[in-house]
Length: 414
Image (cartoon, rainbow, N blue to C red; front, side, top):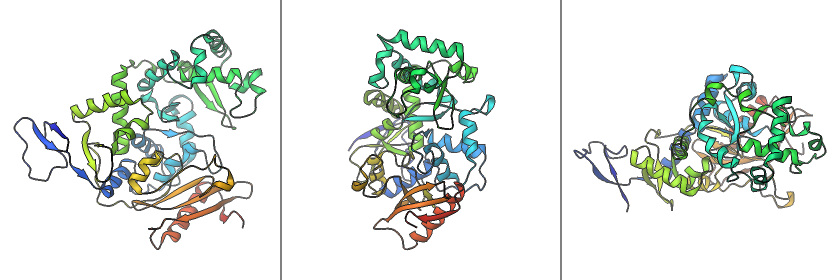
């Protein structure tokens, strides 16, 4: 069994255990899966009292816990970035997030960039992701199909950047060639170039159009000057900061969990984790039944119980890493959006239902906006679901329908 060196009493050591006068050797403590699950839920902001009508402060504190809102194009229920805050706060006004993400002047608190995937992030995280922008600018990061613009076709991309600099904010469809390619993945050359410029930090998102199309502009015309003036940390310092944020968002996690949160490389994350362990900012632990070693945020709450009730979006950070979801909840979850309809097991856009500290059901939902209904395509109870799961799920579906301004909840065939 591995041991680590500590310069202070271990937070999980039994009460009354006296520290050594200098440095002492402590065997890694073992955490049960139920405790790990409660730690993870508390770190993600579950189990807190519902604030009622949430305001910008509630939204800001939620983001401070989970670090980012993932963006996704699917809008069968609601845009993905709105849902994690709803799961934690209840029926908050969605325009709070719109203003924070794409508002003008002091309203803007977020920026778009690649973190876990495409994400909305607090402005203060911009310096921590400049290493990724720099690597993309050198052709060392970003989608491989775009890296040609970092090299032999760089002049073309820079000419397009100059056009935006002269003419102002533009979307890919504002370019003549961009208008002729309607498919989401049927990108024309202009779209490919602006996406590389976005990866490389030469462009950022000014706003989103009604169609959710990104409108690009220069960072200096969108982001606060104070943020852009913050010195760029070394890559090592940025990785340390990102892994630490991951640990705070996850509570307890394996190295792969910590790496996945901001999609860091294996070597980069490993060096950062070791450094944080040496500093005492991460505590090595073992979670009973987990094959990989784990790490605990020393400040993580360790609640005795969690009272939660929430529908979870497929892109919620609590469940987006599927192996971790199985380890914590014994719940196997896969997104079946890209699976042919006849081969789907649970449905197209399936939301797990969290009750207490367990995931007890899942429901495939669709917003029928034309008829003002929240459609239940299918629902499935887990084998260990409590007897009141149906009633509790109905409560949650009614609440979600109200938040989405849909008058009724009905089955798809009703």
